[in-house]
Length: 202
Image (cartoon, helix red, strand yellow):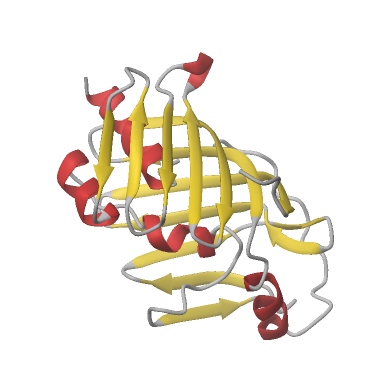
């Protein structure tokens, strides 16, 4: 079913991320953006929870996600409305494994290319961990546009346009509240509800 495939694609993304959510007024940036980016990029382990929607010309799906990031390991859980369409993606970033609600496992040796082949459209799996925190993926060329407060308004990278429409403090860090990602034929909206550094041992 197309909807089930879309759910799998979402979690495969983040493999996860509508819902409106009121964007909170952005706090003033208290340090140069470059310094903030270096510091937060050095946080090797963190956990985030939020909501996401994915829209293609044929379909749309939305749900909740949980993201647990370690230096060489990632775990992403996606749950659709009422628990429908659950998906668990885990492993080293360069070779993820996806498990659907039926228990079938699919190894993604080249995650982005394999997801595109499986679901018909490409997802920026390997850059999303950076974009989620308001960072650029330094492995690729990019362009930021900043607002009058010195906060990113948009980020262009890898053929995607990211629009940051809200910022708020989470613990000691300033993080995006909502991110809209657009590329030809695919729109993703992410609302980041909670984020915290550090994780318990696996």
